[in-house]
Image (cartoon, helix red, strand yellow):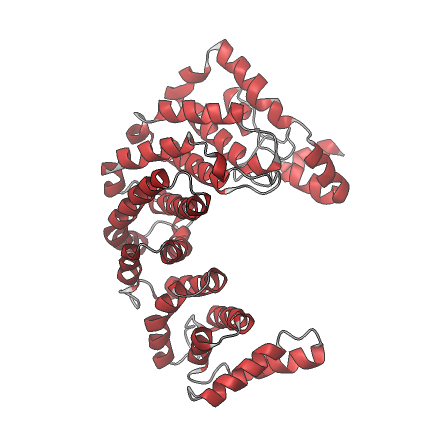
Length: 415
């Protein structure tokens, strides 16, 4: 297929037909696109359409089609023919980052997913300049571009959270840290300063806090396998700013929605996750910062409302305290009778409350509610005590030595 206006027009027409609700029109169009996707220049036509089309619906459709095409075809399977010719692969990698960063957010997310799929296969050996190209964009000062880079980096690096240790993995992480850790730290500090500068600008704060959430997620991914020397050396910068953000309360970022977490809640939830990671895995290095985080997260727990939008924050905060109290050298923090009474009265019992939102969820779909309740909190990532509704009561299991019942036994007992 040539990169011609005629082929672009043909592709536009068939993409439009794939959106038609009539199966008699939609399915033949889908079959046509499947039949031509093996041709050279097909993915480049989609990218050209993304860049040149004036129809936003077609651009979104082209971005989704391109992402799905990459998902199906990019991986090279041994003893099977290469589904994308080498010239197209080179051209895609040469253009996709720039195109992603210059696109609207809806399209940017699709291309970011495509980059992460390509990155899983080709980075770093077959795509060595990807990080350099991304890091250079931090200098743009445009947070639409910066957030695109951060979102793509998060998609690429989050697999470090569950990969098995290997020399290949260590080599890749070291390469990433050498190129990315310092620019990320500088961006973190600059973004914090901008938040102070624009403290009364709600629109600017929403963009900046979106960046801080992504930066915090990247911190978690890059620190998960082991404590990198760079982050150990710069722990004070990160932890002091995390603590400041954890205690921040800006009314401009508060939302009236009782169901969906806002940017402030999402950021604090991620910071609780980051603190729990350090408390669990790097407690010796983290020890000097721990009392401040225990105090801040404890205050967060006793002052946070009961609305559904706080569920993730409350669960992550409880998990942090659980990770602290299960360590023998921190148990003295929880041995005082007044502390235990306060934990029971202000954290455990309130978070076992059957709220109106829980009752509504049960009435809407009782089977789904019971399934989630038996499996544990819908937002919690740890095995939890089953004496709970939607929020995690993992903390008492550690403090009082209660073992969480396994699901099978609990199911039997519940019948």
